[in-house]
Image (cartoon, rainbow, N blue to C red; front, side, top):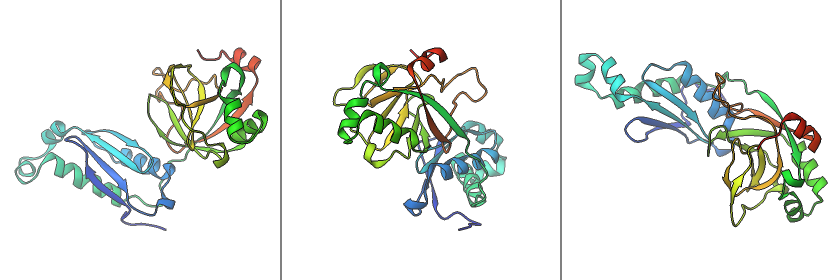
Length: 246
């Protein structure tokens, strides 16, 4: 499929300073890689008044500054239109020019993970619910390939799709008041990694020493929507030698 004009994205207002491009096409054709690629195209064609572009499962949100946009409009444009209408028209044109050649190449990131024990306190129960041993559950989880559907909940937290159906788990009935940074968990059909210590209700199966969010970096979040993640099993000694996460 190739589009000279995208008919599968509908542009809608979101408050007084944002627009949402929402996927309206076949749900089977929508994926986080596509949304991330569309977001990348919008950033590339951006203007000063476009503050941020954020992709999610089936939407791309564009945040803009209506005051700055109004200042940049000509007197004739201000008399005939509004900052919202100008933003809508410009972004709609950008969307029309996107096609199947969307050129953001998702990177592949290997994430080491120490499964079970004190670092994965819910692994045994999760394996039992799946009718597996802890070793079988670990092998199945590590052998799958995941996609970052979106970054959310907290800075750098990746929601990963691609979890084998037999490994899905319910959220904990009583969330923990503190989940250590680096913890890898499962909730429903998704796997996630906690970048920082926080409360959380996901089933914890392991921990990674990788820093997922660092404000000192030019791109603070290690992972972006659309990236592929591969989990690499390591043992406790390797985790602790790496530095672990607390």
